[in-house]
Image (cartoon, rainbow, N blue to C red):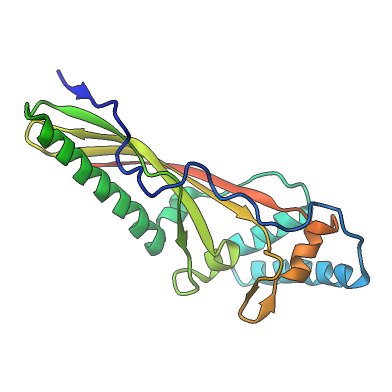
Length: 210
């Protein structure tokens, strides 16, 4: 008979209990619309169409969702995100940590019986650069992830990990921020004036590592 360790989950130290909240832009539709806001809106529609033509499907989809103004969560294919080298390295580092912590607890138990250990990375973030993927860089720039699962240790010390990976991103333009010299404030104003609306990006994937 195996045993299940019900103490603090593996790998939790350093993670956040909740995903990052939206930035501190003005609330939706609280600022008056100015003529230049309408010009920014037209430019964004043109940009989304251009990205689509260039094959930047994720970036175009995110921007179009922002412009629709519903504020509804936008679901992404988490498995494709996990396939990106930077994201894969970050998640694999957590799985490696889980295994090491599980084996340490198992060794301390002294009886060498099969055991199962719950694991939870907490929320963590990973940067997606242009070099990793221009499409996902434009779509997200960074994403938060949380791994939850179980590490099972056999009598011979081998481990098996089953996990769920949730991803999250508060999608917005930070007022006062910029990228490549392009200021974000005009794009943030689309939310603030009600011409667009910020939203949450979500997704999940499941994995098994022997």
